[in-house]
Structure formats: C-alpha cells, structure tokens
Length: 135
Image (cartoon, rainbow, N blue to C red; front, side, top):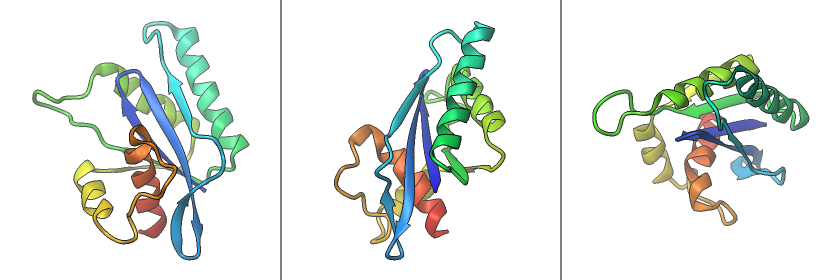
C-alpha cells in the first residue's frame, strides 16, 4: 500500500494506491483530507501529526510519496505547506518525493492513466502513489 499526498494551502489530500494485475489502482480505502487549521498552535500541529500517523497505521501504508511543491517564484508554496510536509515526514518512516513534471509525464503513459472514481482534487496524490508503485 502506497499513500500519495498532494499538499495545497492548509490541506493534505491522501490517496492509497495498490497494485492490481500489474497496474496501479485506487484502493477501496477512504481518501482522506487532513487540514492544519491553526499553524501556530502546537496542539493543532500535534493533532494533525497524530491523525496522519493513525491514518497510515489503520490502512497499512508501507510508503508515502509527496508531490513536491514549487519553492520559489510567483507560484511558491506557502510556509504552512512545509509544516504539513514536516509533520507527515515525522509520522511515517518511509517518505519520498516526486516532482510535478515527473507526474505530468507519467500521467501521459498508459500505466499512468487516471482510473474512474478519482476526483479532480485527488489526481496528483493518485499519480504520486501510482508512479512510486510502478517505479
């Protein structure tokens, strides 16, 4: 089980992908959105980290893949996204990253096709996990 994560604003979208017949497939396990509503509150940050740890354990997640965010320029990621990223890294021992350009190229392949049932906001998280699964 691989969990792909796309971090946007103050939310992390978590999608679990499994292998079925040699191809990635979205898991029947629920897609989860975790939000960090108050980034300056230590209790809120601990609560976010505990929710991520719980999700990973309950769903038997073996690996976590996070879509990288833009570091500079007009489309640079906000500071809260880096806090979310750090909390996820502390929540699971096996975390890796994938660049958005890599995901776009992978999405154009037959293996990277988006299956039915994946909603628009889940696409990048799904692609991150599917890419790691076939890599």
